[in-house]
Structure formats: structure tokens, C-alpha cells
Image (cartoon, rainbow, N blue to C red; front, side, top):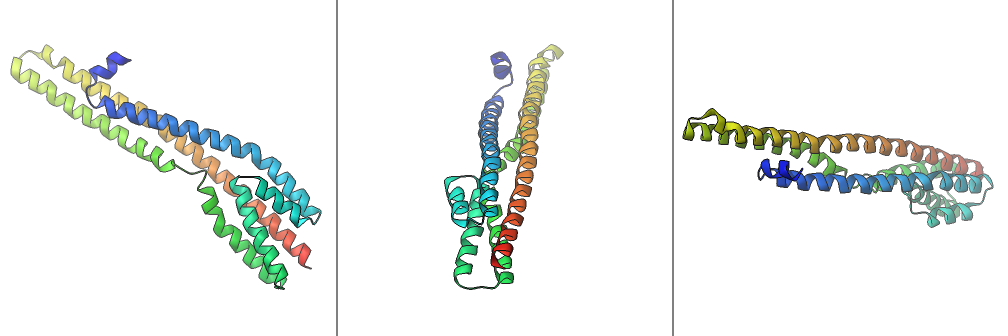
Amino acid sequence: MLEYLLEGGWIMAPLAFLSMLSLAIIIDRWRAFVKTGDETEEFRRKVIASLSDGDLTRAVGACQASHSPLAAVTLAGLKKYRKMLLDGHTVVEMETVVSKTMEDYAPRALAVLEKRFNLLVLVASVSPLLGITGTVVGMIMAFDNLSASGNTGAVASGISQALLTTAGGLLVAMPAIIAYNLFAKRADDYMLVMEEMISDVISFTSDRSR
């Protein structure tokens, strides 16, 4: 492997850096999604059970004890509902405002999971371009060697560099593209869970306010 990196020339250095950056982000985001997924079901169970019992204080406590994005969105809605209830607002007003509060807060909470997604896109975009750059540099070297020596065998090193950098760029880009799409799908699925929780909270506010 080291032999290929050296033979590929200086272009392989930024490609190696992008590869390590991509790997670090993938591991970080994978751990974040696993942790959030483990917490989500238990959190939903506690909150829904509390709301079903009409215990708003216990539901708020469950939100405050969790650090998941879902808990942050739910807490925002429950706090808004509690404040409006004390202020004597109508059921329709509370449903509308609580729903809007949670929907507006959801993208901000989801941003915690989508952190560094842009860097994966950057790696996936830049790596092939670096590979193409290495290809061009390698072909220039090949023709320079050919013109200088007149021996076709002298072009081998330049062509080898061109092929290695192209392959390197693609190999770095592919995991980043795959990981980004998988994580984006997980984020979309989590957004659906948030929407379900919003519906649960709205149902609670309607039932409790009548």
C-alpha cells in the first residue's frame, strides 16, 4: 500500500488525508445514530406513558433527562403548552402554537445528527477531482519523458501515476458517497419519528384541554 502511495506522487497525500477525514466522520456519525436510536424507543415509551397518565411533570422530566434531538423537540412543545395553559389560552390556540413550536424546532434539533454531513459531500466531490488532476499530471509526465528520451518505455511511470491517482480518487469518494446517503436516510427516518411525537403531544394537549 505504501508503495502505491509513493508511486502515485504528491496527489496521494491529500487523497490520504481526505480518506482519513471521511473515515473519522463515518465512525462519528455512526456512533451518534446508534446512540440516538438506542435512546429513542425508551424515551418515547416513557413520554407516551406519562402523557397517557396525564402526568405532564413526569413527561417534562423525561425530556430533561434525555439528550436526544427528539427529547429537545418534545420539551419545547411541552413547555410551550404548559405556559399557554397557565395563561388561559384556548384549545385551538394551544394546538396551533404548540405544533408550530415543535415543527420549527425540529430542524434545529435534527442538525445535531446531520453534523458534518457537508464534509462527507466535500470529500465525495473533491476526491475524484484530485484523482483527475493526478491523471493529467501523470500524462504530462509521460509525454515529457517520451519527448526527452524518445523511448516509449519511459512513459510507464507517468501512466502508472495517472492510473493510481484516478483509482485513489474513486476509492476515497465511494465510501463517502455511500455513507452520506445511508446517514441521510437515517436522518429522514428520524424526522418521521419526530413528526409522530408532535402528533402525540398535540393529541395530549387536545385531550387535556377539553
